[in-house]
Length: 362
Image 1: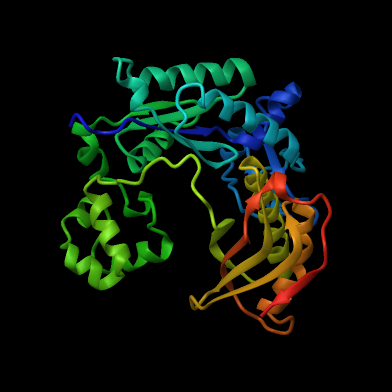
Image 2: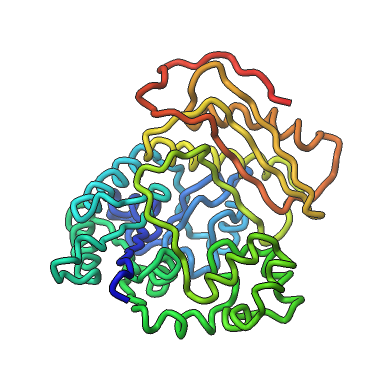
């Protein structure tokens, strides 16, 4: 056990909404929704915990959110404010270790193994981070501490909001056993349904399934499922990995057919992709979308630019054409998943400040 890593996962609570409530004290304690216009075709980007009590969730239509909570306060995103707060938080994290891997504006992994070599406990580092974030940014952050990424992320979700939870090595398997398989990294809704048909519902069920059976059913993913069911995750914290793309995708609880809502959802994703690019100091040359239909058929479409892109309005400008190319206007189909990606990445400081013409990639 001596060579086990000490991993912390941190996740800011209801980040966009929390920034709004911090900057506008009159919003505190009220149901705040950040996203699109409820009178139009907007979607919810995020919402405060006060709004979540009404059943409101990210990716829900803004109109539906308003019907669930008529007194909710709807705000358009202020991405620059969120990026500023994110930069503050990432600076705090890097005081404790250079091994910080941002996943988005509001969450990151830290490897504090070296920082604990002198006897300092990882949980104490997590406490200090949470106190510093609260004091210096006015925001709350939840933290999970464990011996790998899989369990650290599960731990940070366990006592949200404003929580801290530790899963030590001797309790990892016990913690995992009763969890639904959908809680595991890489196990999406389609996989959950397929596992269910195999009689596999919990992580313990998955652990008791022969590895060979899982590989036969899921290929390489099956080997991964067998590992994580046993609490094994050797992925390192990668502070400067070379990324090929930055993207966001979303599987809907109910399939979407309304074209205006599909486009609004893509535009919301463009905001999020732009925020992730800027948080990591990146820009790209190609913007693309991914569409998965009710029958699981998947199509991708992309534009490439002659110069680099990172701003949300530039990414969003591509989306109507890409959507028309992926789903002809006259077709009537149901969509279960959408995604937006920017690829052909380079460091943002190398990017020109103006944009060239784009061309369609077949």
